[in-house]
Each structure stands twice: as structure tokens, then as C-alpha cells.
Image 1 (cartoon, rainbow, N blue to C red):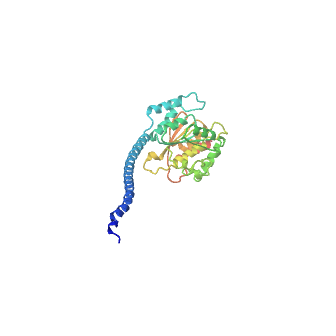
Image 2 (image 1 turned 90 degrees about the horizontal axis):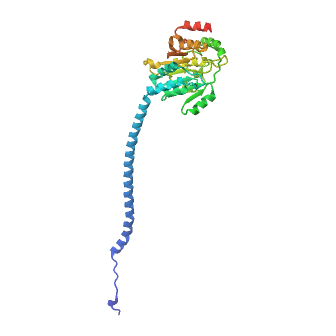
Image 3 (image 1 turned 180 degrees about the vertical axis):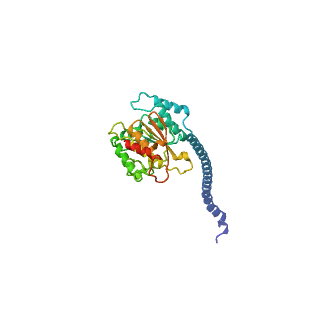
Amino acid sequence: MKSSANAKLILLHPSIHKQGLSTPTAAAAAPRRCLFSFLTFFTLAFTLTLINSTFSSSSSSSSAAARRTSSAASPLPIPISAALLHYAAADTNSTKPHMTSGELSSIAAALAPCSPACNFLIFGLNHESLLWRALNHRGATVFLDENEFQVSKFEQSNPGSEAYDVQYTTKVSQMKELLVQAKSQADNECRPVQNLLFSECKLGINDLPNHIYQVPWDVILVDGPRGYSAASPGRMSAIFTAGVLARSKCTGNRKTKTKTKTHVFVHEMGREAERIYSDEFLCVENLVESVGSLGHFVVEAMQGNGAKFCKNSSSGSSISSSV
């Protein structure tokens, strides 16, 4: 018989199994708590940073916009404008013909009320082109010229400038017949108020970019194309087109009379074509000033589809008979 003294009793305590099972669970939960805490902190920090940067950028944008508005609203200081006018008139090194001091001042004075953000259309690239762009540095200054090479060169030399070449189909030698034809079609293709983009009038320039016909021009200067010989394109089309653009001007506010008017300048009024076509399509009653060889007309926008450019039709008939 075996003795019970040698018998060994093994007891399995339930706490051993519990500790063995719970230890890995606790170890795995610790990294998750750390990760959760990190993500919470990161999200909170990112949110605070985003809110702060939003308010900062909004404030800086408002300040920048205010500065731009203030800058855009202020024209060139008078001393700078005067210096530009002086040196443009006094430049004796230029081989190109240029305007006198009085002629330059007359145009600058017309730009002053809407400066520095006028809508300024100029026929011809000339000695004064950079001056016009500087005086209207915040506005729309558009140049139209007959020479495609000169247009390309000007835009390359002056980044940000806007210039287009125009293919004129007229000649100074055709001045009389073009005028007679335009007068005979004054109630149709050559009427004073129209969108020239769709016009078949031979004097109208209808191949410009579309937006040119939509802009309410404040000032128009006719200082091109060439007109010194019978074979030159002449400024007949430019003067007629300026007259139509001024009368077709859309202002959106008929109560503000100053906005319905366009200042139209024609240079070299001493030549026959410039004088006759200005009298016919810009009208003697609209001539407010003559300085040197520069004629200054103020043309009112027209309502409806009238067939008369000028109120005083007798002047037009005498001009046509003298051509």
C-alpha cells in the first residue's frame, strides 16, 4: 500500500490564467490610447492654426484691396504729368512728327476727369503713344495702327500694352466718292448709331476685336493712319468710325450727361480729308476747341436710329459740294 505522504497535490489558481490573459490586452490598449491622444492633439492644433491663418489672410486681403483701390483712384501727381507733357513736346531727337505742347495739354485735360482709369482709343502709333499710356496708366488704352510690324514691336517693347493692326481699304484719292456713298446710305449701312461689327458701310471699320465695339470710350484720338498722299489710306474711315462709336455709346445711365459724351480729337485738321470728314461726321456744332492742327469735338450719344450725324444739315451739304 502506497503512503499518502508521498502524494503531491497541484493547485491551479484561477488568478494565474486571468493574469496571463489580461496582460496582452492591457499592453495592446496602451499604444491605442497614445495614438488617440496624439490624433486629438494634432486635430485641435490644426483647427486652431487654420482659424488663425484664415483671419490673418482675410485681414491682409482686405488691406491689399484697400491699397489697390486707393492707388487706382489716385491719378498721376500734377508735377509728373507736367513733366511727361513737357518732355514729349520738347523731344527734338525723334524723327517722327509730334504734337505741340498746346495740343498735348488739350488731350491731357480731356483725360483728367476720368483719369487714371479712362477708356482711351487711339488711331495711330506715334511719338506720343507712351505718354498716353502713362497718363491713363490705370485705364484701358487701346492703339489701332495700319502697320502690323509696328504693332508687334510696340507690344513686345511695352508688356501689357494693347494694340491691334487695321487693314484699311480706303485711299485719300477716294475721299469724294466715299463721302457721297456714305451720305446716300446714312439711313442704312452708314447710319450714326449701329454696331459696326455687322456693318457693310465702306467707311466703317468692322474687323476689330469684338470688345472694341462694346467699350464706352471716354476719349478717342484720330492720329492715324497715314494721309499725306493720294495713295495713303487716309483718316476718313477712322473719323467715321470714331463718330459712330461715340454716338452708339452705351452708358447705362442716361441721367448722367457727362457719361454720355465722348471727347474726339482729330490731329492734322489742316488737311482736306481730316477737315471735311470731321465736319461731316463729328460736326461743326460739336467742335469745342482748335489748338494748332488739333480739333477737339465733344459728341453726345444718340438714342434711336436717326439718319443724321449733324443737327445742322446745311453744313454737310456745302461740304459735300466742295469736295
